[in-house]
Length: 195
Image 1 (tube, rainbow, N blue to C red):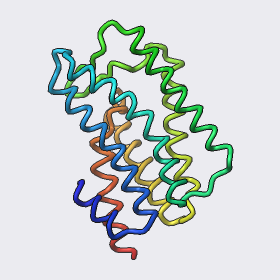
Image 2 (image 1 turned 90 degrees about the vertical axis):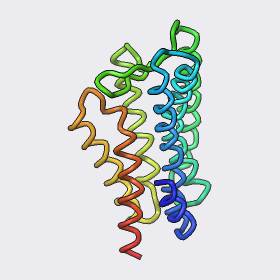
Image 3 (image 1 turned 180 degrees about the horizontal axis):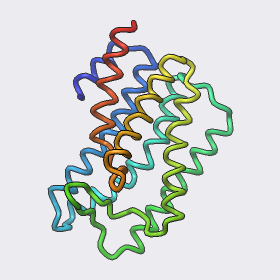
Image 4 (image 1 turned 120 degrees about the horizontal axis):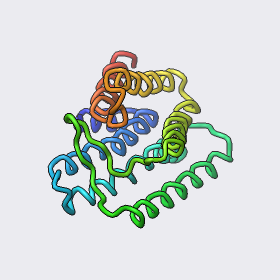
C-alpha cells in the first residue's frame, strides 16, 4: 500500500498529494494498533501506542483540513481555521485529562478486535466525539475544488466506514484495515483509468 501511495504522490497532482498525505496520517493508526496487539500484557509499548493512537485519531480531521489548505486544494470559509484550532485544543485537553485520570492506560483485544483504552465511558461524550470526528474529517473533502475527486474520496471514505459499521457494529471504530487498504487502492485504480 505504501509503495502504491508513493507512486500516486510522485505522479499525481496536488489533489492526489492531498489524498496520499491524508492516507499517511491515517495509516499511522495501523502502526499504533500493531503495537497494542503485540503487547496485550499492558506494558509500556501498549501504553505508548494507546496514547499515540489517541493523538493520531484526533489528528486525522485536522490533517485533512490543513493539508488541503497548504496544497490549496480546498476552498473553505475563513472561520474553518478557528474550528480546527478549537478541535485541536479539545483533543489536547481530552488527552491530558485521559492521562491524569486513567490508572492503567492500555488497549486490549476482544474477539480479535481492539478495544481502545481511551474510549469514553460517558456515552454522550462518545457520541459527540464520533460526530465531531466524522463531520470534521468529511468537511475538507466537501470543499475540495475538484468535484470529481471530491465525490470519489467521499464515496470511498463513507463507503468504507459504512461497510465496516455494517459488518462489525460493535467494533466499527477500528476500521483502519478496511479504510486504509481500500482507500488508496480504489483511489489509485480510479485515478489511473480516468486521467
